[in-house]
Image (cartoon, rainbow, N blue to C red; front, side, top):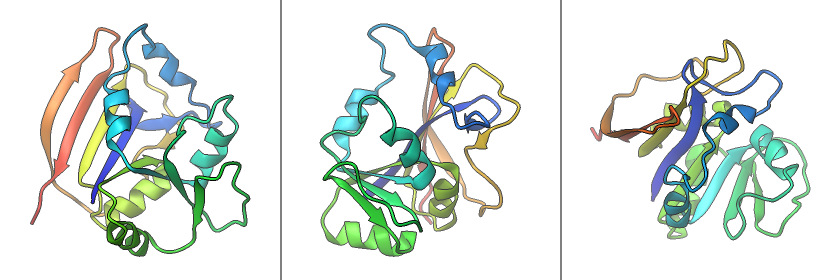
Length: 175
């Protein structure tokens, strides 16, 4: 199973403002431009995210992950607001092994930073698609919160858009 981190971050490495807001994404909105999102979304079987990311997403006017199973890592007792939401209380390695055994092909790691750190530390991410936004936040939720293990990755492609967004695609270097 392939695991992809597909995420946007400010140029200084933050995925959200200190208050959790994601309004920074609006600075690159452009009619008829989705930065490859639809093609990517159609390629994934399931989605995994942390509880804080889920809390933000569940309050959106429209659920952004319709038609996909969404797995939420949490220690809290929560009630899903949709039938395709599942709460995960096992470790990330056990979770990935279980999904792999189910025959899933492609898992999207949405975030947030704490869950990303766990996946990085266990060397579970195969592909990183990181869209850098043309803004410095100065503070907020870091994309890669310390500490995490060193991991070499290989740049596969880079694309700059006229909105100022730069999309980097990296792959894990297999040992």
